[in-house]
Length: 242
Image (cartoon, one colour):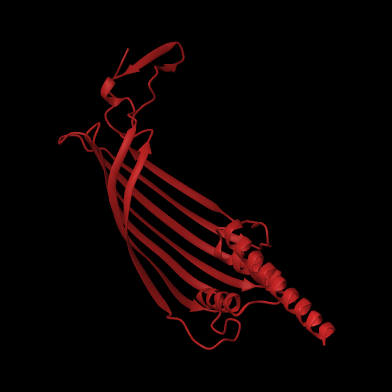
């Protein structure tokens, strides 16, 4: 009788340890990679032949369904094809260049040294504000989904009386092809606008587009294809003197 109880206790401890190890391993997958697909792949690889808790199975099933694999791990339940998540977030941070200004040193070109106007030198300090936006996802095939994000924010520097209004948008079409191959097409656009004085409103536009084609494994992504980046700047008047 005592031996039976001991064997049952040892078996229970072994199962509990296996479940704990699998859960900890899954947590490591989520922490070690900010890439959703790579995290899911890592969890699947580490869960192979492991004893999983019901919660871990439910989480992985949901994550796979969000990736466009409608059956997931075979659990009941479906997710919405299109979802939106609005958000409101405070802004409180230190900025090393609030006004988008120039370094506090002369500009040397050849044998000439140029000194910028004092009000064009970059300013440091704390900015306070808030941002509002929405993120969304739409599933359109097996392993295929479209991510988008739109954000608007305004931050103010109490010390320098400078306001920074920013509009940004990003979109990414992620496509599973075969085995470990994926094709991603992404783009983004950001419009920061700084308000120094009523008559002075410089505008900066930064945009980018990337195309990713390649496989990945549990620790990294291998990328190929093309990466494109474009940038347009509309700075303040040069106002440079010798």
